[in-house]
Image (tube, rainbow over all chains, first blue to last red; front, side):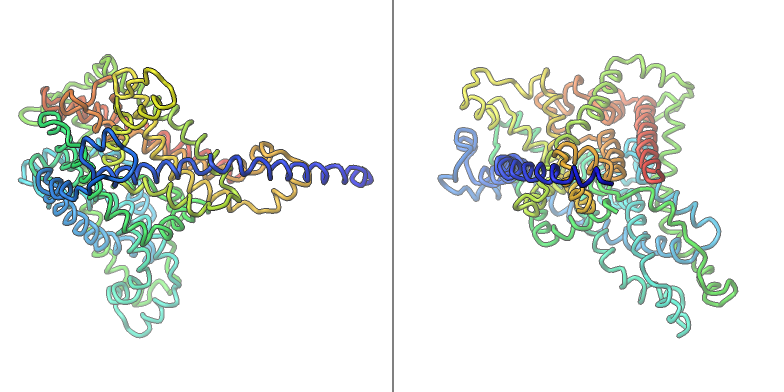
Length: 293
Length: 321
């Protein structure tokens, strides 16, 4: 053990040198560490500023404030690009799908995580396997099936698809939340004579409120800009992403109206930005926690 | 759907969370009441999940063995769709592109995310940076890819900057030669924010003492990364790799947006699996071929399964060691 005594001074000196080096290097690295964030802020402000310019100004003077604030771009995007219809449909899709997913997935997650019984494990796995199924392997039969029952071009049809596709994820997250409820709470409810469904709706469900909100918000974010199923299932209806794609297509014939498209993009992004400012840090905490365990 | 598929937390946790029997006695009225309600609680979710996900997926397997235009008679053709597909140059190109995204894009994403994670450790303003770089993750891919396209236009911002710093003939990013590279870079940009956030959280979970010991031993920054940070984060990296694989295999919007002036679809040279599958069934200018579309969709499903199992197995091995 005497070797340690002899070698102790050296590492300390080295570590001091390393620290000194770090003190010099770190300020130099700061701009690089910030580069991705700076780029993101830049792109977002470029989009918002561009949405208030004329197309000419947007192309020739991409930097700087608009000379004249063209609020009319937003009116144009809302009407000419049919974003009004798209927003309305997407809002319906988001709300209906989100609520239905919770109402349908929560009881299943509760039963399979709390009741026990034969086959619960296998059923849970079956639900969770759905997380890995790509949309390409479901779309063809769904398309044919929906055409037969007249659900093509119907928002209701898309809601049904969203619910089916969204169940695995909701199930997965809610299972984790239900598991964290202490059994004592349900037991005392049982002793007081509460029925199973009363316990579920009145006691357990309110206890996992933050889980319900998490699921709803994540699903809403996903459904807001969903493109694949909308593209296949809605030949004439609009959703926000279809309106944007259609408008971009139409520019090939009608000439470039980039500033209107930028206004359209902004209309889609603004609700997300508001949501993010409100819930963003909690969202990040949740995702960071979910993985680092 | 998109974010849901982007951020499923540790997949295998759920499997081990198989329910255990309730602590109350088997015969108690409470348990019997639960058993009675069980069906009513599970049936709706199972029914709609089966109708939208399970049955269509199984039916897609059947479609892949037939020749079918989506309407009219189906003709059983055995494995012909698969053999035809693997001889189709467009499919092979899509295959190649998908693998390039998966591996090449993956390397870029993780190089970038790791660099940022290391740089941001103890850096001033890291919470603010984290907040900003995560935001693109929740923006629809259609929006992100359109902005990306405008940035890389012939006279777009990127080229204006390049001209400004003295590049005479800046590249045609959206031309047929570079379009694929541009798309991959965009996907890398979109993904690195999310993975940096995850990796940062994992790095924060590493006990400080390990770094102190490394400091005392005189380890360099690289050594600390190689022998402390990296091994301690192995399982998170595995999960991230699985997520990237799943996301990269089904990336769709980023390609669709670059249809440009050619019509509804982008040029064939940049297609990936998702686009090939979509185009085979729904391209407006050709006869729908559901058999081929189903077959290529199943290749995606198969690869997704393989990559998920692989990544999670790596995780398990690391954990059990």
